[in-house]
Length: 200
Picture 1 (cartoon, helix red, strand yellow):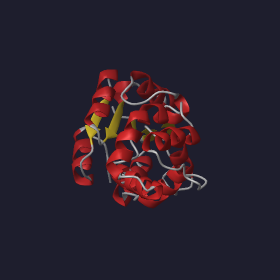
Picture 2 (cartoon, helix red, strand yellow; picture 1 turned 90 degrees about the vertical axis):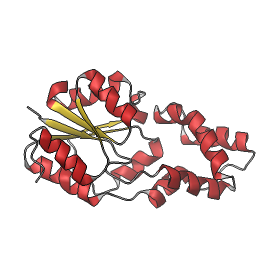
Picture 3 (cartoon, one colour; picture 1 turned 120 degrees about the vertical axis):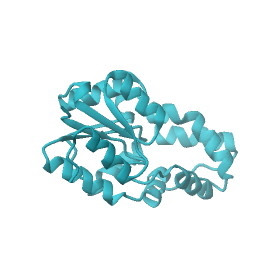
Picture 4 (cartoon, rainbow, N blue to C red; picture 1 turned 45 degrees about the horizontal axis):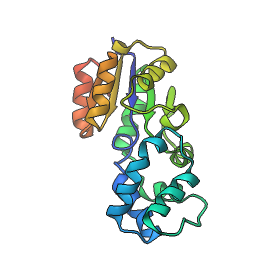
């Protein structure tokens, strides 16, 4: 029996913000988006693990791109604030799941500045949160899924993980969790209902 449903953030609870984030930062730094993205992606695993601070990240990226470091307090926070668009239909689903008695979890590969933005949003109250940057582990590593399960107090087979990336869904399945690749709200509801989960 399913007892918990765990949600990714970008691409599930919100529209995938990546390209808008890259564009915002590239514009601010007066750098080509393609070059900025390529350089950022090189450091992304360490950013998601919380190994690099935002200051260290900009030092490395700007040095490689040959541009000045940002002067604003937190360029990434500003970029997230500008780029993030909530999927209200998913928020409604999360609230419905809670009302139906399911535990709901949050599991995301996230940068430290983005967590500050997250905490200011009026999202549903999740029963457990796992931000990669505070744990030093990232999806699709086994330990991050196990951490979410432990915080929710459920077994792998009692949970469903939802992510928009196939590799992260496969990571959850390797732990023994049920998992769904998110495409749209109707598809998600249909797949949840196939596990006898009440979505309304």
